[in-house]
Image (cartoon, rainbow, N blue to C red; front, side, top):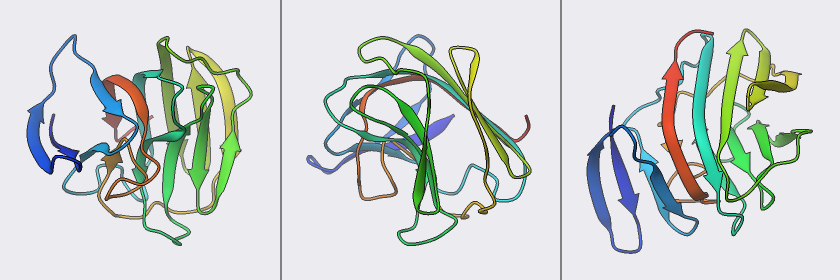
Length: 165
């Protein structure tokens, strides 16, 4: 997978190719990865899986397709304690599992029809109905939309997006 990494402070845009054994590090200030288009289908089922290691220094967005004020915006957020939540429309669905910081967690998010399920380290942690659609806007890692808003602080590794469950 190839994407663009942006560091707004230095105005550096770097094209990156995924590399086995190497995690992307986000500073929690202004780093994000911008895909040129929406990579999450707006009507079809999908799965997202990744390893994350939150720094605990900032509450931020791991991945999003976001347009401010739009009911079809969505994102996956990590708070200061490493707890993960699904954001859709204008509300968060907090997870029940205690999050961790400075250690790796495996996260899987699946959408099938209007059902959204989230697994943390292989255990079902959240199951909700999400009637909102998904906006067909560019996908961003490390931020709610772009330029960087609510930036993520920590590491992401082995990030995968599937157009199936």
